[in-house]
Image (cartoon, rainbow, N blue to C red; front, side):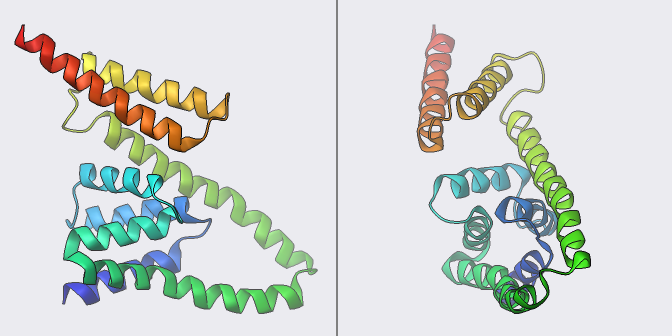
Amino acid sequence: MIYLRLFMAFLWVGLTSFGGGYAALASIEQQTVGNNWLSTEEFADIIAISQTTPGPIGINAATFCGAKVAGVPGAVCATLGCVTPSGIIVLTLAVLYRKYSELKPVQHALTGLRPAATGLIASAGLSLCFATLFSNELPRMFSPDLAAALTLFATALVILRVFKLNQVWVILGSGGLWAIWTAVKKFCLKL
């Protein structure tokens, strides 16, 4: 029964997520955390893993969520649920777009979808930001861990936006720096 529930949940994600993989994250969070399949922290971890693996983040997240909930069959069900609607919709829209793309109402509708998709991405980003920076693993305020996490966040943001460094290096560097930070902290606590 969990396989059908996973398929239907991610069918809904695939059906209602416009704007690409990042726009699907809010819906995936709603389906997984909302159904108590994952905690907010587990969801944040899955998004981090999905971001670091090749492929579309929305489909990767669906696959990892399905695997976390029900193993390999759960991953297959979640992934199929996620991609089925988009496959059908994209094929249908491709035919219609080719035929009607020059019409002004079609152009206006497509223009209106852009801000909504941006809002969906921002919502998912804010949820992920709060889950990452203010999770149970990090003390809430005025702690060295929170200061380190905020510093790492700001540094990664600047490196990615200003210096345009490949995100793989930023992810690997961030993971390595946090591992060093944790080791130094544990060492200092033993003193």
